[in-house]
Length: 170
Image 1 (cartoon, rainbow, N blue to C red):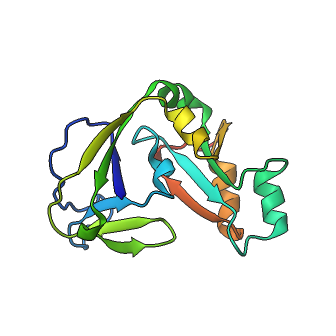
Image 2: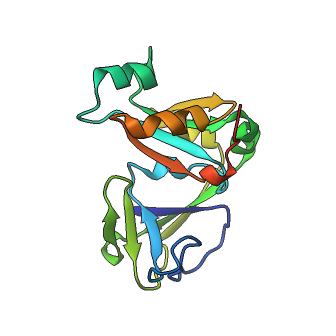
């Protein structure tokens, strides 16, 4: 299955659309694979940094980003967003993957160039528990900026989502 997450409970069909920052690109319907789906167990506008130790991640980077944890995946959010994540809910729309093609394997993104209908809609209420049940460390920090500045030069796999909403300082 592929997924799309929304705070809207009743989207009957997904029409291709142009993203706000991709005006020269054709319209697409976006979906995410199961492995990367927990990156979207958040209110849409919540800034977050997702980090994973993968094959090729150095021991030094594992120590830097995971320290004394057995976890090898971590999602960090800012403390100002914690209450909205704790009390929020999202809807997981499931899609038949045959309607999609891989767009970015590193991020788990798939696209469809045509209208698609979900095969199932599920309400997710306890977002924090859902993240933790995936074996992902949830890190709460005053600001994501230290991570944002350090991660690109590291050997971890990462995704930074909605960073335009992050605090510029701690």
